[in-house]
Length: 482
Ligand SMILES: Cc1ncc(COP(=O)(O)O)c(C=O)c1O
Image 1: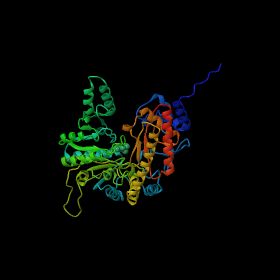
Image 2: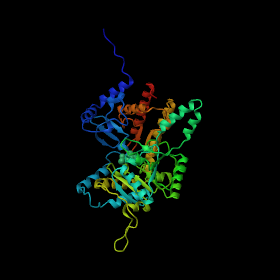
Image 3: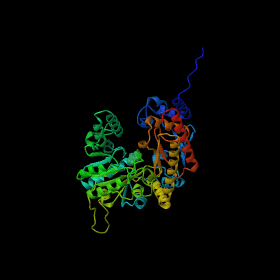
Image 4: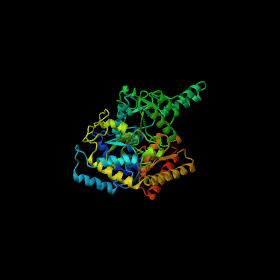
């Protein structure tokens, strides 16, 4: 008797195709597992049903908008160094700048000959008066918060739901009830007779309390953090109430996790309020900086923060982050400018700021080349790229509308993504979507719902990205996943 095997499910075919294409990446992940503690292998959460394809693609090389893996697959990259490679991978002029500096050596400790020019370039592009350098985004935001606390002698900071500011303790805070849990509870209460007023109350309730968002963070740290709802004018009232305790309001002006929320009026009101109350307004421009406009989200929204933090694009592919701001705040790094040959001296008290690798010569060389290029090109570079991204998103939205899929794409600058608040697509489906894209030669991380375009992406590349998304969504629709 012969038994006929049932046809593989769509999920099984997806897993088979992916694991077949990327055998060497999988072998390397398995070989490294015992010694390498690596979160990239499991993403945000371990999911047993897709365990067999939970491993990162191992890159062999990258150039322009392309990336090649160790199995020889070629991808159009939309991860683009997590938003770092605005000008594509490995632009020849940045490579040449790094090579020239490498030739000169990597003297860490003595002053760099170009650090002043790089600071001036940041100041010219952003309009902020004074600048200092660190290595990662996390470090930069942590430092900006410390400057704000030093200058104001206040302890509390306010952050907003859905923002990400890196992985220092005070930034890894969330509201006690996640947005998702709150909406679910509201829906369930509103459906129960007699409990509907409670649902209405919960819907309008604006909490402020913070709880640690990860294990290992002391609850005591949460006492000095307010977590508020982004874009909600009631959050401004809370800030006003706490104005005497608040050192800073920390904002990711357009959040990577919710790029469809671009609250211009809210930001302007926040600027006015923080100005009036002496609270530092810190713009975390890690993703938006130099991307949406040479002057970042501040130029886009037509306002200026007290302090702003940058990384990603600024370092030209090498680790570099920037803390920049108006002199009255930044002077707390070094006491403020003074001159030789007279009796001038630092005027304001300083906080502690240091780091072995801050101002690394290779990173500064890459930053100098990148920022000089951005300055020379002017806002037209971002304008053209942003428009290309918008065109892609418009086409994708026309596709989902014509096929009656409850999925909407959005973009800010050259970052585009599925807008979760305007779509009905469960997280597990988003993960499958990313693997469908990988199987079609579009590179992103498992679970990503969009990515970045760069100046290296050609119209043909963008067509291929569009087609791959359409095929992936169609496959998911056929499997009833969307
Ligand atoms: C808005 C924002 N702030 C801070 C960070 C932290 O930067 P890093 O990963 O370099 O520490 C990130 C990282 O993506 C970010 O997107």
